[in-house]
Image 1 (cartoon, rainbow, N blue to C red):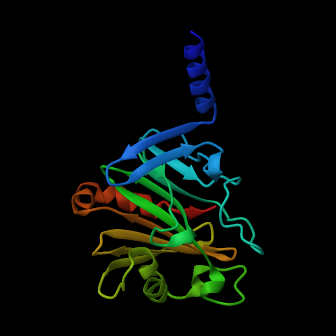
Image 2: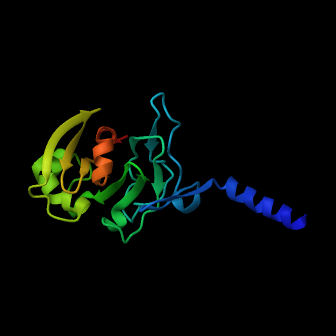
Image 3: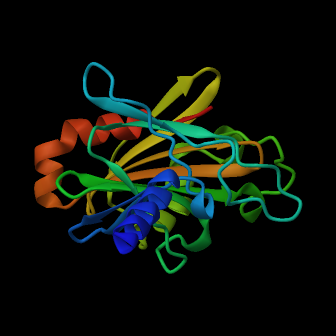
Length: 217
């Protein structure tokens, strides 16, 4: 009985921390770890269409190097079933990857938050237009997302504006990927949504909707 009580107490302590670990085929481990390691859940409950909104929590750690202001929060929408997955500094994008999400049947996404001063001086209040045209931005930063030159891979591009902020949107192939780029404060935001061939074919509409939902808030 004593052993059983100790086991129950241990399980309760874990539950109180809000730890949930799920496995994804080919996607490593997904985690919503409460306050542990700065991984704070930011997903809303599903709306009437079964979509959730993720908003980067103000308290989440990361990206606060010396001389940097806190990261301006961002948000996006995903269908129910997408989960946060751990970020590794060994990943493409390295320490500038702020977040990863995945669904083993639909695809995956990540957010790169990079210091603007890597690319331009005197842009503490950056806009994507100040950084460059859509062509310049995808040529310069597309390789940060796909790991190779983007020449001949851009199938479509568009510009959208929301609450006075401009977003550049791109579709690339190969690989199958949507990229949304914008800037705020002293950072460039690159939002990438990608999938394998079969996932892309089956979920193209939803993946595009995810990509187009990205906002800096």
